[in-house]
Amino acid sequence: MSPEPTEDLPAEVAPSEAALRARTPARIFVGRAGTSYRTETQLALRLDHAAALDAVRSELSMDDLPHELVERFGIFEVCTRAADKAEYLRRPDLGRSLNDEARAAISRDCPRGAALQVAIGDGLSSEAVRVQVPVLLPLLAEEAGQRGWTMGRVMLIHHCRVGVINDLGDLLAPTVVVLLIGERPGLATAESLSAYLAFRPCAGQTDAHRNLISNIHSRGVTPEQAAPRIAALAARMIERQLGGVEVKEQAEGFEMRMGGAIEG
Image (tube, rainbow, N blue to C red; front, side, top):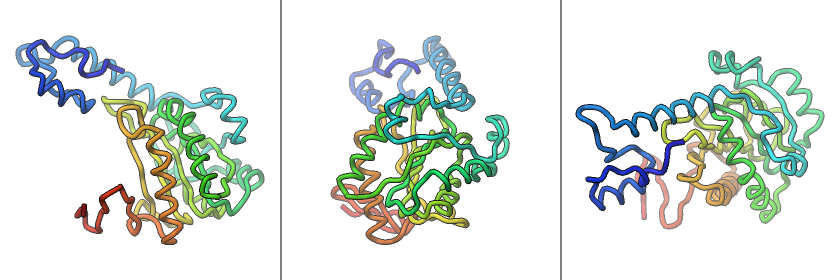
């Protein structure tokens, strides 16, 4: 990825503008050459665009995860009905359903009825999984342990879309499913992960039944910040026996009302 924004500031950028740049990965106050980008800005854009393409197109393998992580959580591989990455990109619907082999393996090898079922999906950024999951997953397991939750066996789902959560719910009947999945990369980072949560997911549920904590990466929500937020949101879903639009994350000092108004 391109250097941190403050490292290549044009000489004429004021300190106040530099301070703003330090707060965002967006390309602001980068200067120009006539009506065009400066050479370094253009090269950084091309570099980040290439990284985004690599993140989308690259396949994830078990070897990309630390051996200790795989052993600790018994992580195993399954696949959706998308046969390869090309088909996955053309047919999002196939990425929302597990294939027959995956359904059989999960039914055979995973305990049913866990309080928290975590799954890892490559999604649209394998790089996000490689970078964020080895840090986030142990922290999430620690949060679950502190709450006395049982945790199901973790699986890595290739060619995965968010809707696959419904299949996991039908097969394993967990209380809450957490899907850690690579986000669609942009030109700011290709390492951003999302955590989708669903309370008692089942066939027919839509995004309206799910909750999300996104932008999990080093310049967004760090894994250390994300783990307690995910656990707190799951706890709120369990407490209310609901999920999706009926449940809002509670940030300290604020609560989101239905309709978008924020109370302090």
